[in-house]
Amino acid sequence: MSDTTLTDTVAETGSDKFTIVRSASRKRMRPSGSAVVMTLYLLFMLLPIYWLLNMSLKTNTEILNTFTLWPRDLTFANYATIFSDPAWYMGYVNSLIYVVMNTVISLTVALPAAYAFSRYHFMGDKHLFFWLLTNRMAPPAVFALPFFQLYSSVGLFDTHIAVALAHCLFNVPLAVWILEGFMRGVPKEIDETAYIDGYSFGKFFVKIFMPLIASGIGVAAFFCFMFSWVELLLSRTLTTVDAKPIAAIMTRTQGAAGIDWGVLAAAGVLTIVPGALVIYFVRNYIAKGFALGRV
Amino acid sequence: MNKTVNQKAWFLVLPVLVLVAFSAVIPLMTVVNYSVQDTFGNNEFFWAGLEWFKEMLESDRMWNALGRQAVFSAVILAIEIPLGIFVALNMPKSGFWASVCLVLMSLPLLIPWNVVGTIWQIFGRVDIGLLGYTLDGMGISYNYTQDPLAAWLTIVVMDVWHWTSLVALLAYAGLKSIPDAYYQAAKIDQASRWKVFRYIELPKMMGVLMIAILLRFMDSFMIYTEPFVVTGGGPGNATTMLSIDLVKMALGQFDLGPAAAFSIMYFLVILLISWVFYTVMTNLDKRDGA
Image (cartoon, rainbow over all chains, first blue to last red; front, side, top):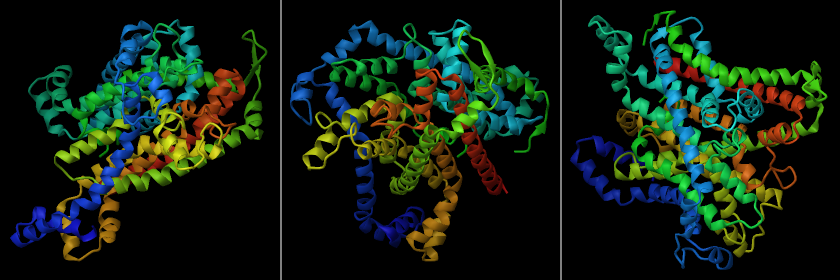
């Protein structure tokens, strides 16, 4: 595997016909090593997910009594249970409400801040930037109790906005970092030209600048959405009934004496769906997002 | 990019400052407040000084949790970073299969954390889980609710499953930014595969790898949901990580003083380490920029 990879890299860029022919004959060899590694890795990634999907399509009798690699007695009853019971599907609605609220709030405040960081020096900018990072790194467990007391005291306990604001703790810094990374790539001359042409800051920002970093805004929105969606500790602590997220409803079901495995699995599968739907659009930016805009 | 000095930029940062102050500074001050006071209930507090800090520093409970946490983070990093780099090196560079790999690999990253726990809880069960059933069928005794070693293995494998793709994605992004000319030069010099990795790919990936290590360290250091769902911190206290212990103390037993002191020390450890990483990261940035 070792030198074939190199040959191919040369062949792909070089114009030497001989190299291309030679590499074509070796091409049969090349994928073998890498392809086996990737197949094994993807298998490892997908097997547990497949198992969940598999279970969600079985009846509880089949799950508990026979061990089958695929559903013999295919049923959608588990999904029907979720979609017909408000206690279940309102969990999804609650989750979506606070996740969307959080994404909107995070982006609204992060956009101007990221612009300031990417364009200007001001007093304490470096310290402020690092301070934001530390909030991304703060363990939610540290904040669980004070959040509970803070939001109870201002009467926001068990509301969607409370969870949305709590998630701003790590999503606002994240959004600022990602957006700053994208904004750095936009030449400063564009700003200056616009100001000379008589644009006000607001008009320039909305009409010219935001379309330029549209992909960055998309990626930041995706990451805010994602981290708010996967978080459980804070959203569970801050809600009891009215704004209870789907993730917390699932844990409560697990605590019951007889666990309804099929419904639990179906609920799990449904939580994977939103992420799986949007990931295709951001696949080329996902690394940049995780690198906080720093690739 | 050369930036201009403009103090008015503060106005643009102000909304973020207000919001983060509300959601970070106020709660943090509450924690500080509790950590130096004691109460007999009725909302009557009195000054306790550094009592709670002393108590926590002398208690085995925190040190044990910290020890388990440190071992866990170290094991996670030792497995995920090399494995992630290895996977990235084997990924197709472009085309249809690259997209397929990217999308499928990212899937575990987008699953709510308690569902990740649920998936592995089911997957590892001897009666209904594929992994547990297979291991049991092979004659290996495996029970993550009874055996501390099995519980640890389950949690480590789960975390590798959950987060290795993040390292792989970052390393892949780093690899893709290497110009072909570098490889051609290496070919002319007849450099071995290892030398290409050691002197071209690894240095070029250093920046993103630092971010990967930073993120993986931080997130594994504050892991809560996944082990909580799978083992609940057991058997015994075998998998009680710092966050699990803290939540038990603060919301379960309502020991506000000790829990607050615990929180502050926990946060300080993370702050210190993230500062070290941040300094290294910015220095790497500067070196690349020069």
